[in-house]
Image (cartoon, rainbow, N blue to C red):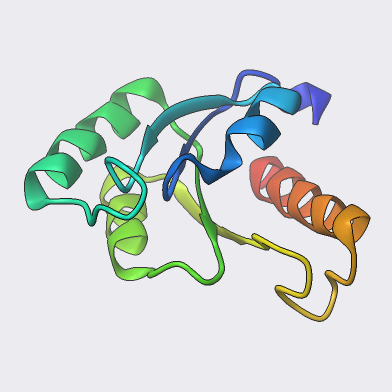
Length: 114
């Protein structure tokens, strides 16, 4: 992940803070303004230009989150929507905590290399 240090990302909400800090990514915004609070049209309308201006590359969303709004933001901003495992057993490849990080890191690296 070192080559991608400083890459700006948006998350569904602040669930990836420690992950982002550990791997040197930069949080540029969240889809939800606060955890559990659905984003308003005003919030999304303000987020999209910020995503474009800051050159955000990825919108990182756990696979169990609603996709409609993140898909819209990705399409409108040019960022790539990336569905990540949010917990162990999120998919067949994520059987323990180490596999969770391996999977998510691999997904991010692959997306940023494209």
